[in-house]
Length: 75
Image (cartoon, rainbow, N blue to C red; front, side):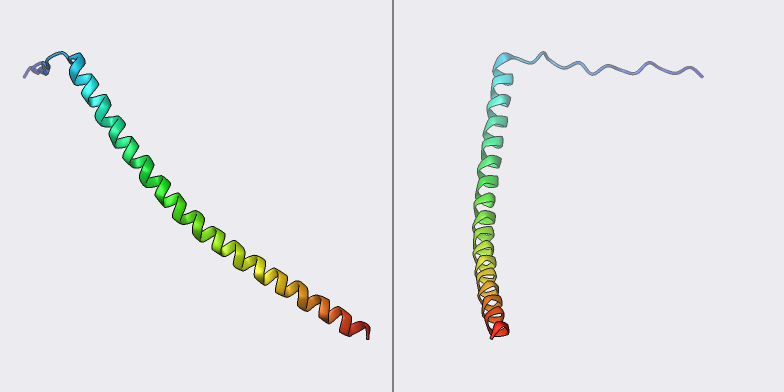
């Protein structure tokens, strides 16, 4: 039994218009992705700032309590 050679798929050559259109579509898609990522980053950054302010508030409270404890231990 002999094997038959594989058939080659013949496709028409890509035209410049097709290439440009595909490039423009890819650019539009990437631009939308970038905007979506920026929005997500802004939300994440807002949450991070809120958490950092809460952390700083707790640190100030701890420092104040430690200072009071130190003063009370001296007396």
